Each structure stands twice: as C-alpha cells, then as structure tokens.
Image (tube, rainbow, N blue to C red; front, side, top):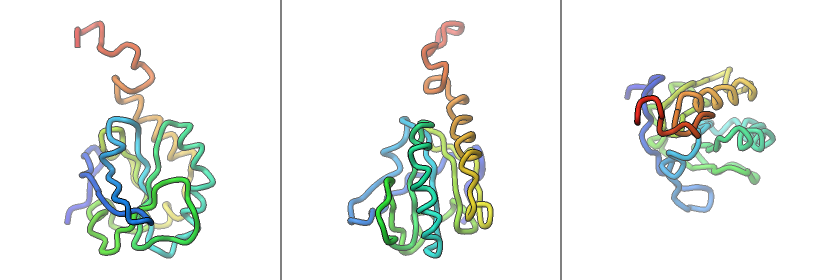
Length: 153
C-alpha cells in the first residue's frame, strides 16, 4: 500500500475507542486540524507525553487522536482508538510511532516517524497546526474576510 504523501487528503478512519464506541476521523473534519499519533504498543510513555501537552494542542485549535494496536493502560484526555489488525491506519506511515498533522479537511501537512516521533517536539507540532490554519481562508486567522470581498467568492 502507498503511504500518504504531504498535500494529499487522508481517508476517513473509523475504529473503536477503548470502550468499543466507534469513532471516525470524519467527526473532526471541517472543524479543526487533527494531530494523529500512531503508536506501536511499546510507546505508552508517548501517549502520556501527549496527555501532558493536550491543553496546548486544544489551545492551538487542534484535536488529538491516538491510534494503536490495543487499548493502553490509563486514562487520556483524547480519543484512543484500537486498530488491532493495523488496517485502519494502514498507508499513513511506514514506521511506528508516527505523528501526523492534518488540516481541517484531512490534508497531510507534516509527518514524523520513528525516533523523531518517539521524542516529539510539541512546539514544532503546534507550529505546523498553526500553519494549517493560515492556509485555510475560511477557517484561518482571516476568516472574518470570508467570503473574499476582493473576488466575490
């Protein structure tokens, strides 16, 4: 399977959360950027790290969703989806763990894999989240000008 390239839109992923409730990435589309954390089961500390920074991501206008092979121990402030057979997140990254920043429409803006994802630079990730908003006229910092007055759109 081909790996999602930057600038391409990720398909909708629908997986159960830790309680069995089905969650779809479509629920976040057209609302806010999405940070996807694909963990490999050996990275429980990675999810704890993101939990500590979750308020910062929400403050930046993003939602965070973790996808892994099983339900991790502990409670997390974000959705943790179970992808037991790996098919739900197939095609998003070659190496786990991985972190992806998607804009509000599902377009991939940035991805970190392997060692870069095991020790994430949360400030850099949040800067990419902010960058996605700048690219979207109807949802970015200039949304008050939408529709564009200069073009009639």
